[in-house]
Image 1: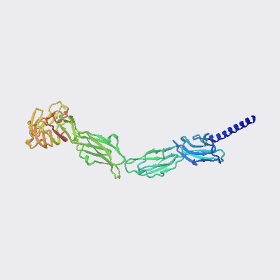
Image 2: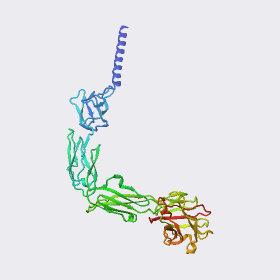
Image 3: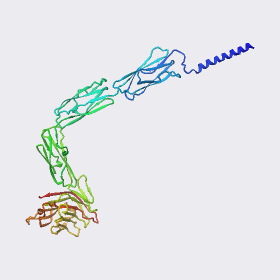
Image 4: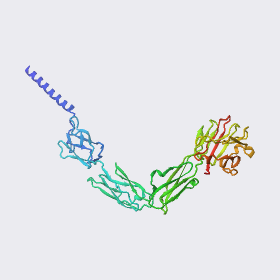
Length: 494
């Protein structure tokens, strides 16, 4: 019995040992296949990385023996840095901090495997932070030209970019840079400037940074002494103005052909004298003159002096339509549209020129009311009406010094309203009555009526500013009538 018990106990112990050995062989996941110790690493021998926001470096290790990775720099961190208890095969991710220094830096990864002689070394070089400093030139290059220089301090390769011809003679257009903070001097030979003051931009550029600055060279100076005199608003009635000119050379004037009719100028030493005539348009007008050196300077662009004149009337009521090309202004009887001029007629002549008049309603008229309330006391005003041939009432010219009226009809002069191209009213000395004046009305340059022997209100009242005319449609009509004005002209006899 005792023998049987011992046999049974031995069998149980043997079975337990056998189970334990099998279990160890089947469930030990840290083991690698039996054989010689081996480690495989697919990392490169060296890597380069950017200074800012560098990308991670990734490689793999496969080994049948434990391994470790050591970095000799804190800014370079491999993960994982040793084989895990559960596996000897891993993907290694190396993260790098930004390099805020002005010099590049190197980290060294050392990979060791247990039981294997030798090590694997991986070098990682990280670029320095971009550092570009340009010490710009501060002096203006003289007209006769010369040499200027500026300095570049860069720890990266750089290049110079310029597209201006007068800055082509540069001794060095690129460089490798250095990490020692040493400056590099760049020299430019600037030629003589035979034109106006000129400027050019120059750019120093690295892969990630650039600095742009301006180089200015003196040239021929022709300019207004006061900057605001380069743009002038002159009276619509005509005006003269004198402007001081600063110039390093003798200068001359050129007036573009399209402005010569109303704009003139002359040089007197260092003074420019501008003159304008009466603006007869229904729109403001703008022109300019150009100042040039008297000597021939190829490529010199004239210095413009601008002149603007407002128009000499304003819309008093209703609406107007102005043609942007011709400047002609059209009003309609709808809304009793009319203008008022901003000048006064004393002894002189005012003339309205038309592109066309369309007046189908016999009750309508071109009304010209020479009011005196604005510039006088309301007495001795002029009032005229030009009516179509279909009107029952004749056209009239009132000279209300004495409330007299002079009537006429267009058809008596072989005219219809559509034929009318100009209407004028003139106040002048009466050739038949010394010391008196006469008031004359013209249509298409032909006299149609006249008042004679009127008191010379203008001489008697030298402070009287003249007749201010309201002109256009006095009232609405049943049928729409239109007038298109080309110009208004004024000539003073005083």
